[in-house]
Image 1 (cartoon, rainbow, N blue to C red):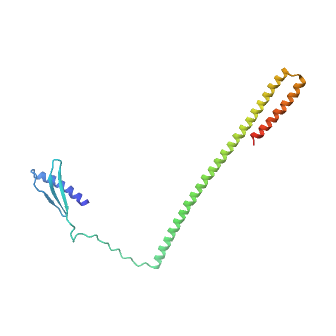
Image 2: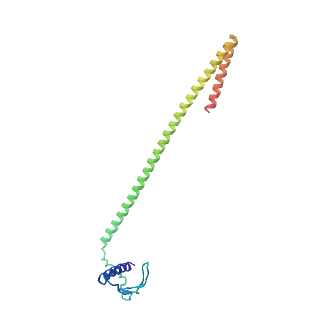
Image 3: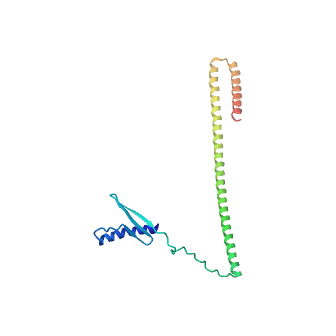
Length: 190
């Protein structure tokens, strides 16, 4: 195929050169080369058409040559032993390199896992601390709200109730408030 392309390039160049020497077009419809023939089929307004005929390969054509392998010299026992030792050393060094790469990979995986565990522990500690602070704040707010409610009730009691009744009701309200607070605390922290 490469030869055919080269021949086609030569054909174009040949036509160009011939047109320089012969101003009048020659009426040659067949161009013959070593192993191919080019025939002009017909001229058209859009261009020209050619038929390319490849000749069958001749029996004397160059067959692929097989190169004879160079004769091997006889190796002595020492040379064979040296080659075997060198091959063994190469094998061992390759194995050592593979083991080293595996060890580095495992070490990297171990470091990544350790870092992930540390980050997880830090996150857990921070979340626990935030939760404890929030629970303490809720407890303080609840105590303050209960104290405010008791104070308002006591102020209202002062206006409407006699002093003896007032004292008994205050103590009862305080006991109930503490009781409700304890029950609520137990439910909240379970």
